[in-house]
View: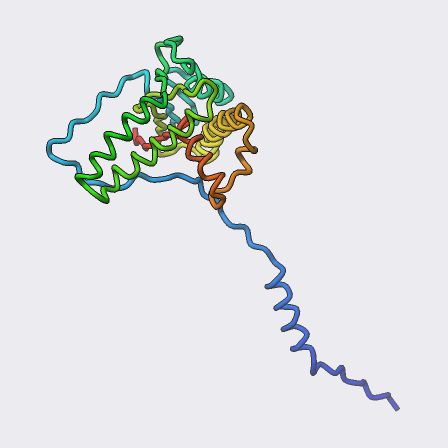
Length: 238
């Protein structure tokens, strides 16, 4: 006589499966796409009598990436490995206030006297127009410049032209890989130059500074003044 086959008790299998599901949901990490940090300009209505400032060719570093992933800087095709040196030269070529390279932005000396004169002018304008956001931003900017003068050897420093900017243009079919590589190079140069200032002034590592720390925040404002990150992007279809 055949022995009866004993049934498997599966009563608790559902509970076990449910617990395993919860375990994997809690412990599994999901990859999150990281974007590129950029501060976008505020949208403003242009007054009818607004006069556009004159922009000199030497103040603009034009970078073009075409649909064939070729890189052109200032009308000359280059390898992407050359870009870092070009960007660094853009920031530093005339950093001593001398016109060493007529194709790169000029740097103007900033002293406590210049800062105080600008602050006096802005504060007078603020009395006539209290709460003006543009004036408040300018006052904050000149306060940072004044503090930077106090920190720098000789109580002054050289600042890039206000009109200097990097213009990055991409054709519609430029690959994402090349675009990110260009952005990485631009960010790397800015970070390294800011870190050099930190070393010169005996500050903590630039990459360790946090916006949440009041002391770090003041230093970050000064670093953004002396090594500005002005990037304008545009897409071209042809």
